[in-house]
Length: 247
Image (cartoon, rainbow, N blue to C red; front, side, top):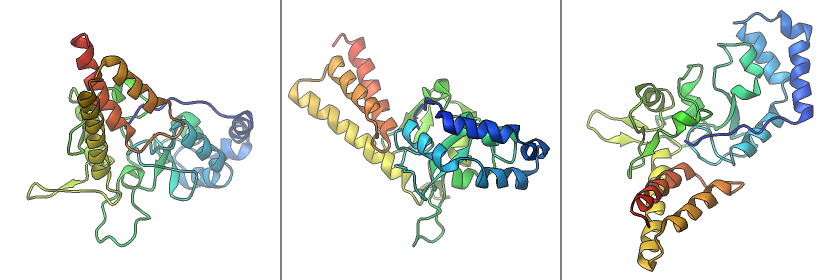
C-alpha cells in the first residue's frame, strides 16, 4: 500500500458531477436509499472517465494491494466510505479509489480467498491510502506480510480482517495466500529489493545518494511496478541507515 495523491478531475467530468448534484432526481433521493443512489452511480455518473483518472493518478496500481490495474473490466471504482453509508460521498471523487477485482474473477480455485474491495464490500474502514500519516506507518516483512510500524491496531484490523491483505492464517499456523497471491507478490518484491542492495554492495556503490536515486526512480515512473511500496519501504530503511552512518 502506498500513499495516493489526488490529481483532480477534468472540467467535463467535474461539470457532469455538478449536474448530477443539482438535478431534482438526485436531490429527491434520501440518504440511505442505496438502490436509488446505486442506480445514479451506475447509469449517470461518469464512471469510465473517473476510472481512467484513478488508474492514472495511482500509477496503474490497486489502491489496496498494489497489483496492476488497467481501465478494464478487471478493475473497479471503489468507495472508501461505502456507497450505502453516505449519499454525497457516493459521487464524491475524493472518496473514490481504483482497485483490482480482489480475486473475484480468478477461476479454477476452490475456496478462493478474496481481498481488497471484494472482501471489504460495504464495511467502513479506518485505513486510507489517501492519508499520508497512515501510509508512512506501513511496513513489510521478508515473507510478504504487511503490518504497521509503530503498531496501529485500527489499521491492522483493516489490513488483516477487512481487506484480508495477509491472506488467512489457519489453525496450524500456516498462512493461505489470497486468490490474487498478494503475499507472494510482496515477498518477491522484497527479495528483488534486497538483491538490488546486494548488487550495490558488491560493486562498492552502496551510498545514500545512489539509493535515493533508486527510490526517486521508483516514485517517478508513470506506470509503477507491482508492489512498488515494498521496494520503497526496504530501500528507504537502507537509505536512512546510510545517512546515519554518513555514507
